[in-house]
Image (tube, helix red, strand yellow):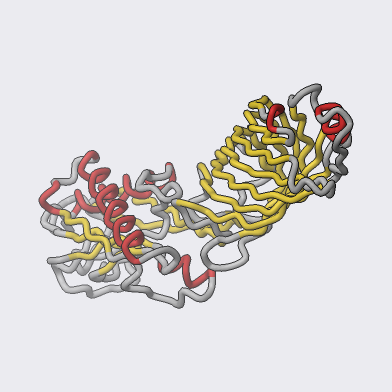
Length: 361
């Protein structure tokens, strides 16, 4: 290009912005919880047993235990839904065994004061249906219930994102005349379809600026970068160079290209960077590349392999939409197989999550 009256110089300006947030900050968080529970029951049930048996039996229903299984999803807005299945066991200490069993199925609206990727308090409100299996059997019945509560989940306890969950609830059971119960639960919450973790995210913004010069701007080595900006003078003619006039190399890491959690959907910042990549591809129309996707080691090998492949293909589709010929690019996912740093630290895992352009010619 330096042989003619104008010079096109590609100036690569890179700026960094670091913020404390989750890598692929969650648009949603899906999870499973298993809790053991302790309940304090309305003593009005004792009067019902006495009345139902004509005074032949009395009870001392006061407290009991139970189990609770929860499937939930919290959105980025903080709101979410939880499906709850539970079983309670109410001991009467009256010599008649367990006079009350209660099984329930319900849905709760949840609001979390955080992303569930760190310590997060939450509140909930909902209801459902319960089956009260009682003594005597003539009282067995399906009833509606409502509950309200508050709780918390801890920060991740291990590399798989497992957390501690604790909560307390007020529960109104419409059985017979209606009863007011209180329940406390504690157990584990396990994330599904994602890898919740808190990391420092480094956003790298790349801008390609076109500078058109007239004959007075010198480019001695004819690499397209004017001498005043050329940090690698005397580059051999025909060698592809970056914005500083230095050889481009065979691998270009696109650190700012990020995706939504557990998804191949590009974030807005990533699209801005890929717009600039398309301009570089246009500058060198003969250049053939492999788009290589990589993950850290959190999650199964198969999951990481599939996710990296989908993300590499997403980048390729975007560049094709920006006018880059599809036959110039190949998308390959490498999963967690090619780390560039340790997976034992959050900084190392962040560097291992990357998309690269590997120049093939």
